[in-house]
Amino acid sequence: MILSVLPERVHAALAPHLVEHSDLLELVLDLGRPAEARFGNNLQIELLPASDDPLDPANEVTLEDIDHITERISDFGFDNRAGIERTLHRISCIRNRRDRVVGLTLRIGRAVFGTVDIIRDIVESGKSILMLGRPGVGKTTKLREVARILSSEFRKRVVIVDTSNEIAGDGDIPHPAIGRSRRMQVKRPEEQHAVMIEAVENHMPQVIVIDEIGTEQEAFAARTIAERGVQLVGTAHGNTLENLLLNPTLSDLVGGIQSVTLGDEEAKRRGTQKTVLERKAPPTFDVIIEILEVDKLAIHHDVAKVVDKMLRGQQPRPEIRVRNTGGVVEVVQKAELPPDRPGERTGGTYGMTFDPEPISPSYDEGRGRGMGTERGMGSERSAGSDVKSIGTSGKTVHLFPYGVSRSRLERAMANLRVPGVVARDMKDADLIVALKATFRREPSKIHEARNKNIPTFVVRSNTYIQIESALREVFGLQPTVLPTDEEAAIAEASDAIEHVQETGEAVELAPQNAYVRRLQHQLVERAELGSESIGVEPRRRLKILPAHQR
Image (cartoon, rainbow, N blue to C red; front, side, top):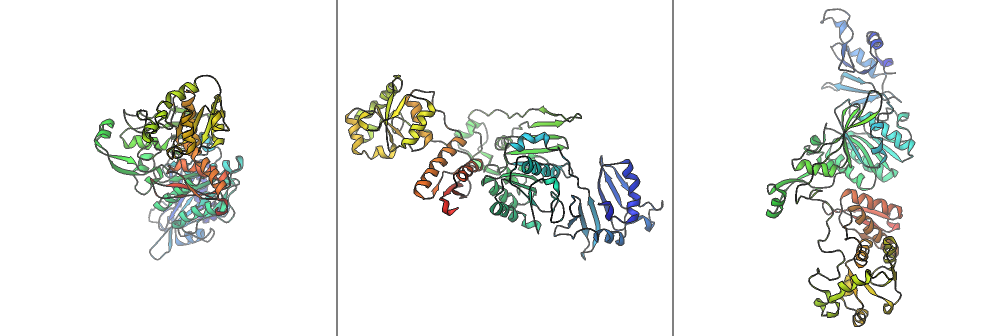
């Protein structure tokens, strides 16, 4: 179809070369110069050799030749690109100062199937993926195939934001190579970021596919999309992760860079200068793929950790995958991150932080001072040892929750499989599990428990994670392990969802990184409530809304 729009003399000059070479990449026609055909392996052939005289006008492209082509293709957009309806071919123009087209680049578009087999496991994981690579290495081809697989094979709701109609072809009807994906066209290139947001707000996609993220506004829109729990698959300008990190416009896609001044003790532990570079925010994309060659990729699976190491002067080794001549995908180099230095934190300056005190101590402010000491409750000073003897005695322990969720306490005991039951009355209890705020008010029931020598175990907040941590200590299980970001986020969001459903009041969660917020958004969506991200980094957080405010 692209050959049919060429002038007859150009077509005739090109035909013999198509017999020898089947990998035509593009045609270049510039006014006053011979036409040029470009094939694979950097082969370039001049066309229209009417004579050996380089000054012979018959060897040159004329305005009539250019007009012949432009009359048979679609109109050029604001990005000076056009196409042929229902094809993937892309025609770009060069204009003079009077807006007259004086040059054309006709790029051949092909739908190549099987190109993402080399990264299929990553695509299926649901993680957001950013692909980097030089022009012509196959980024857009892989995007198109990713959209087809996710929409047709996995039946996901995929929306393509197609700025130059390069992914889904020209015309109002998209090319069948994108499968069941929907395509949103962009009127002006500078409006791409707005269409990205519109796609999420209006069409409820599970996956957004976007080509050529190149501006700060588009980078911000990509972050917003990722935070709403949508899988984002895109490409950006740059060959390597290091190029992207040093690009001030796009570095936000991988967390951005900021200068941080460390304290003397922290600098000494790290073995660095006091002023260092660190990642200022969580990365928008979970995985970065550098396309080195068509069948050779470098994959960074943990972008946050990789960026942190690079900013500290360490070069992590990415995973290298290749497709051999037999079509088999091989891992020729496994991913390897340099080990952390002594005393060094991972995750940059941003990330979840936990209280350094025990999550659910038997004493209010550490082991050295009993809770009773603070309030004059001397009988509580031996609570810690009493609790330990109760939990390790092997018999069933009756626990009375005071200010603590009964259902969460029962769920925690069932999950841990400990010999405990919830007592209906305090007089039947072997142990009281009290909320810290309730305990400090010293209500009458706490005084009653003190008089009966019933040990009291205090938890800091009414969340499942802290209740479970308390039971681990009560029943002498393995030492309490601080929860992972994901576990803590799910626990906090679950508790807040219950509160919103019961009271109809909106709840703000603690600040989290983008990946954790995405998990929380997904949990809220399953509960059929509303949610939004508010605030700015590093205090950006989730707000859970009642159903009527969705």
